[in-house]
Image (tube, rainbow, N blue to C red; front, side, top):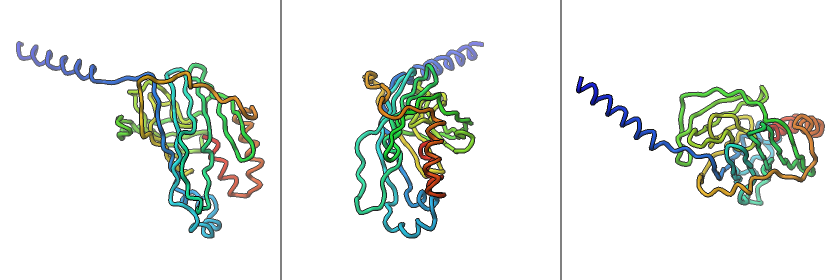
Length: 246
């Protein structure tokens, strides 16, 4: 009996120590790198055109973005400027989006510049059907669990989240997991987002405000407007529209 009591005491002590070592944070500032596999992206957009321009395309392009927020609200916006060699025939798409999320109401305000027009999209959160997996990966010092999802029943997404950061957000409009998303991939866009730096202390929440400029529309209205214009560009345009759906 004495040995059993000692074993129980040791187990309780170990469990308590483990709980004390666990870190949980309710505010965060994250730097993300968005990486596009340019040849794969353009080859899928238009194979014939790709063969004509492939020598003038970079292998990949990285743009920088920031996420700041807590369990009630967040904003995702462009970070430092990226450097793109001017000799290459390429400019990023959908790299200037500003996405404000209100987790209390389940609504977002997204500023999305699309060529000559800027939309201010006010709507409920996009619906993503998530399925958790046992796979894990360490990102920016945090152990993250993998999830796979389907956005709007058509766009496949994979994501890695940590439950140490108590925010159900992520880059762009990717959200809805039981913790902060630090890594995302969208195969149809040949694009990934990964956190490179995570700060959890002294977060400036005053900077978490929505954008205000742009044509106010619902998400459905924006997609219909883009579909009408981009489909005139043929299959290239109809595939390009996916960039603005996330």
